[in-house]
Amino acid sequence: MAKGYWIAQMDVHDAAAYDHYRAANAKPFADYGARFLVRGGDQTNVEGGWRSRTVVIEFPSYADARECYESEAYQQAKSIRLPVSDADFLIIEGYDG
Image 1 (cartoon, rainbow, N blue to C red):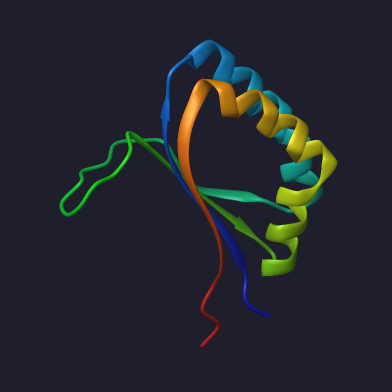
Image 2 (image 1 turned 30 degrees about the vertical axis):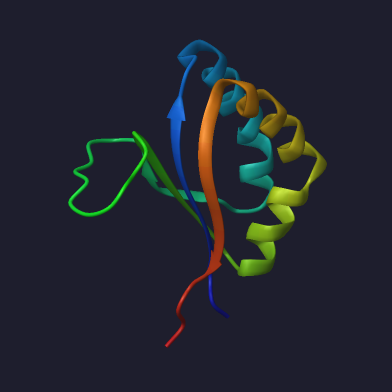
């Protein structure tokens, strides 16, 4: 079964408030087996447009990735993130070839 991934690019406008989002998303991430592959860090944009922060999170399956995003716990966390950041967000199925 192919894994699922969240890929998000964002610009954070209030780092202190964003820390509350990180605290709030810890439980749903644990519940759905999420594992950070990329969490901020240095990045170099070599083509096209990009935001200042990139996050890649791996889930055991695409279904788990979707269910986590749709869960009540994550939606509560998301409500903290939305007012303090602008994001492009994708849930994608991994390649299992």
